[in-house]
Image (cartoon, rainbow, N blue to C red):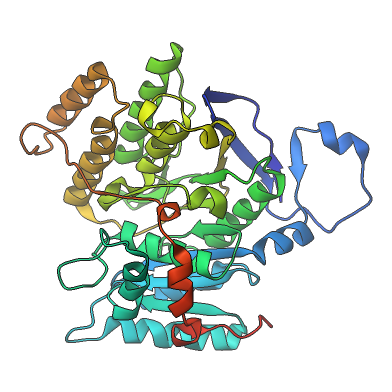
Length: 399
């Protein structure tokens, strides 16, 4: 891959947010003789060999809930071979056992592709046992199982990745119609980690476009309602603290993102539709030098780099209606509104925005979703003692 290096950035203390980078070639060709001038070039060449080496230590998490099997199959075919796939399903098991259908699909595909995978169900008692063994009770419901939700599924994937000793984690949504875009996303992940300057790195995908059918024609829109609003208010938050207006954030609601495991283990995760924008909020809270509550000498020494890369492939996914979009707006802006670092003036702006959009509010406030503590707070060695990957999938050596 040939990928543009960032040409500007915004900084909140130890959080460095880089400007959007472009992909100039999805395939950069084989490794060649080193060229000293490449060091100063604005486009970075990441060879296939470099990507393969990173991907050996990368897990791709695919959360799924009752999606079409053909979509799941397509997503899996797009994930580069060296990555370990972990599918975390919260699909129905009553009447028609959707999870069993997903497991059969994954097993068949990975058998013919000769690749490794894990697949677990979010409501599996053995998954809940991993969290309970560490004393992580907040993620467990009244039935003694992991709570419903995408964020909870991502936390399962994060814990499994840690227990397997991998260095990098990436997330891919299961409702993507284009396997080629999935391949590009993961190659962007490995490219980011190849030039990342610290082990505290996050990469986020800015979709090139989202195709929509309008009057029998395809229209490649750039921004959706949710991302436009969430990007704006996260940028407003930065602007208030720096005193300079910015539009640096373009990926507030990016479901496709990657994190180095050292950083991921230190992060709290928002639940509901707050999960993606809360990544930014939590990093600002912990590393942005704003909140005294999260200040520590250990954090002083960590610089977090957030990279944003615009893909070349368009992104086509399932359309889930206006109610779904309104819930996402409510949750996304609520994650900013309820943060301890959100100034009073910004809270007033968010309330005006939600009322203008006619989004129902409870007690005249946006939704406040629970936040799950980082795994760093818990003794994961206790989970490692009872973790048996053989029960969850095929972990034979990658062929």
